[in-house]
Image 1: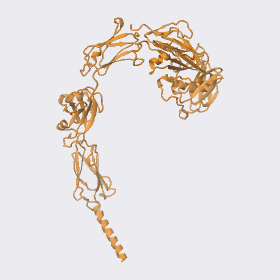
Image 2: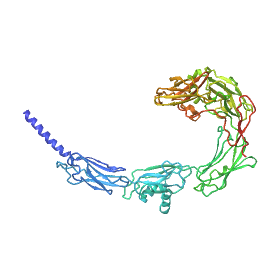
Image 3: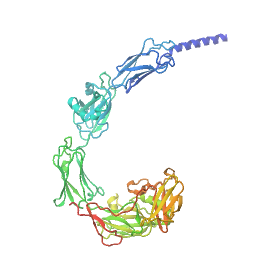
Image 4: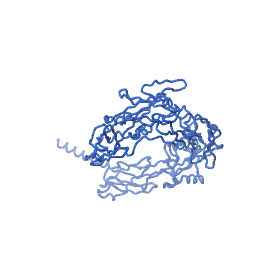
Length: 636
């Protein structure tokens, strides 16, 4: 009895399996379907083998195809059939694939009829636009060149496309640019015609009214735009723009702060925000005291006129523009009523400036650190100075402090140089424990004079100097507070030269005054942390030969500057001290050094006179450095 039941179950199992196998013969998947952009291939997957394995080229074409774009079908394996189009399908294409009647698998089983598979590439869509989507400088009467993925019917564009303009509730209709005007615009944008795009896919549109200035504008490529084949867009496509500002002219001059008048030693400029009418000619005129004038011719291409200084301080000027000035779109200057424009210069700006954050001064040449001063406190006084403020302005003195790092403290040099590199003008470089030495430098020609004075540095070593000025802080800091100006100077008669090789390196030490070799100089090579990688001495030729490989940059430590945010432009030779090799040389009481990143000399020099200035001798005073550069008579 049990055997009969088992036999019956097996029979039913095989019968059901056969029935299921017959029902399973179908198309497992077909892609694409629906609306899909950028179609290049159709793929159908069958549940059972349709052609022999290893002979994919054989077998029937399983579908009756209705599509206006040409293509070719093929079997890639017994289950997979693909139809390749000759190119990516453009917009507006509709295709259908219907299984052929009597379609059977390789073993003769019939494929269930799945009906018709169809897809379309959707209605015409905007691929790109000129001006580009997001442009914030479109014209009030802008013509938009749209590149479409398929030509669109004129009626559907006029019915479904429009502009949404900020401040206007209703959608504004478009007009299509055709004929000679279209050809002229496309010719002016000839690069479009060189892209290989069918010119019929370019559509030129313009709003039926002018856009307001500075208005936000959306071009709405709406639902319902149709291709020639009747395929329509199913959803809106929106491009975003903003109308340009009105045509205006902006005057610019440099100021110590927003509250100040123009700095008289720097240029004035007048800038236009749009190209000028190419047929317009004229001059912008700057009138100064006693009827003196300067003229600057207008140019369509320049977009800016410039008047170079220096100008008299505390003087009023008048800037005039020619009447009827227009831009290349014919717009008149919106702020023409602001001209003639009155301009006023202030006093020559306060200045306390070293030539660089770091430099080298020769020991045997009356070493002094040059400091350029103008409109500053009358004295740079010693150590502790009381800062006082009166109603008429700051009357306090500048506080100067100095720290000398002698040769025997060579291990401190790198850390101090990095401190100077990132020193803030709002905070002192020194701490109480640094025991910085105060000094006094008299300003012989008075607080307002423009002169170069020198801070004497008689002994060899690295000096870190800091000037403190309340007047500078009042002019340049907000809120006003004392401002600090730092510098480091190496006073030495030694010059250190370094050449690194792959297996050996060389250090050569010479004197600065005679360029003679220095023998028996103690030489050390360190990383940025001060770790000594090699040390030795120079021979009679002033050469220290390093017969061992020194680490390359990838194998050296990195030392971060104490301040994460700094102005790299002010750091000069100090910007690379966070890595690399630092080479020192010592002899007696003298010391010098070089960094592996330095490839040119770095020295403090005398101030450079501009062409509008002249050299005048200074009276013999302590710390003076020869002649001084002062402004010549300005605005001549």
